[in-house]
Image (cartoon, rainbow, N blue to C red):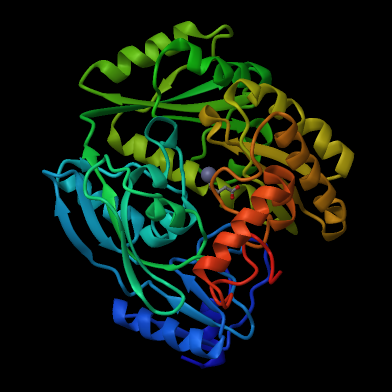
Length: 440
Ligand code: 2HG
Ligand code: ZN
């Protein structure tokens, strides 16, 4: 496809990275289409950017102006479900939310639940090693990838991985592709582990008088010997901005809010919630249990919309997705008020605090207030690294976070990663410039 108007739909993602219109886009309808596209691109040295739902937050699928977008969205069949083995095989373009629902209908559970459930694809989730709230108990996409079907830069199709949880035959190439953001190969299919569906799930809102009390509760959560499946945090500013949308829980007395969720056999989630609340040093102001599945789903809908709601009407923003060891969450959160004042913008945080992963959002409502946003983002990254954390827990590096990568992993690791990239993609046609920078 080469129609300029139509190409705009393939030019960007949900990050602040400026969209780039590619020369052309190919909508693959079969794995053979992917092979043919890559073999042609390899012969002619044309950059190829693979694309799923385009919901990334780091510019990972923003194409090269001289390149071609290879969309996997139309490869969208669930190939097979093998409940007795505990896995399902899917095309890369299957949308994550509907896949999770299809598993639920079979009393199965595919845990990874990234924010853009209704639009992101499983192949995109694998390419970015997507996380989400229930990663706290169940882990991230990588933990479910048993096997990967991928096409190499020269068009060769490869089957990688295994059909059972165990397997140590050689290097784990399947999982090396997980999180490689389309820079090593194009993922066309995945074998994903699925679990039995938990029988009962219970969600509750726990408002706290202060941000420190809520952050302390997060820091203590591991010591209580309980396993919430999600423990989400919202600071006061995030609540206030999100609450401009009707239905979003809020109260002027709340300094911060936790959304906690437990699952298990009937009766277990309720008992766990009680023990959790009793185990906290500073009691929450209230315990608002979500009565009924409809209310629970509604809370998660609002949680998933938080990213959009807090930014509504803003002149600009930067989203960070740092993570720190969970005991250091209070130190990270304590930085926020000072940060906003120092850089003259609104600094807020929400997100998957139970695993130390907070979305620090730097938002400005007037264009000139964004002048120091990059410096503020630097300060967030600096703080996360100082606390022993990471620059990106789930959104990936793409283009947006490239400049921070050497600070976290160091030069030697970067060299090794570049050497790997050269092995997989000697002509440098696969999503050039993403993750590692380059050409080098
Ligand atoms: C979420 O958890 C997403 O809502 C998006 O990872 C986070 O945009 C953000 O800040
Ligand atoms: Zn998130």
